[in-house]
Image (cartoon, rainbow, N blue to C red; front, side, top):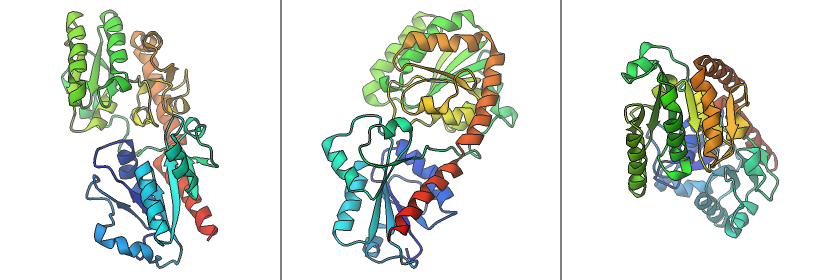
Length: 345
């Protein structure tokens, strides 16, 4: 703890976008600064502050600077405010991915932060305090284009020559039903394509998901619109699809289009979350209004008709991610905010 200057708390056990961010980002940040996580639900490979070490928060690190408590949720802001009120020498920082007007309590918490970061221009538009926009990056070592035969769609043993994917938790918020309806309309005219859906189905969404499967069966497409459930390694599936669709009705940030582009796939996405700030329409993919199933279907159609278009946009997307969204860019941006807080004392 004597060398730890930044603490990234994680106060939820359940996997979420915040979890994914911390898992990917902290090891990169650790190359620049002394940083640790604090809380449950994270893999063992990450640096961790244990609960028995909490009293050390009242001691400054060897540098003499105040530690930075970098929160990403309300409960983590509460923790930082409490520790600071009890005398721990801390700077408080919050990263906001919310795409909505904040409730009064959240606004109260945010006003007590020493620095605030928004993950997109859209999320920043809902903040009522000075902030800096630093978009999430992507691990370009973990997500990359096909390199081996196993990365090709043919290795999956599924019908068709090309795959179109929709990944993430299967539920209405993610727009899985919009994707299924588009596939039911389009696939009969494009026999070379197979649609693949991956992700966990929570108990409260099982009946809804079974309804989607029934509609697929009624259309006679149960062999070409496939629910694979949770897969051991989603990264290989990004490499196997020629086109990725992100039809969310709402999102916080949403990393999946970046993961897809880093893997060489073209992307059609709704304008939920930060999707519209990631994609260059007509160059790396297309953006459509959230919840608009007809627009989604028509944006997908040209790619199924011309797989070469998907290939070209996938190549452009890969170059775009490498230029604008490497994970190191996010780490560098956050480090600059940390330095400004330390400069203030």
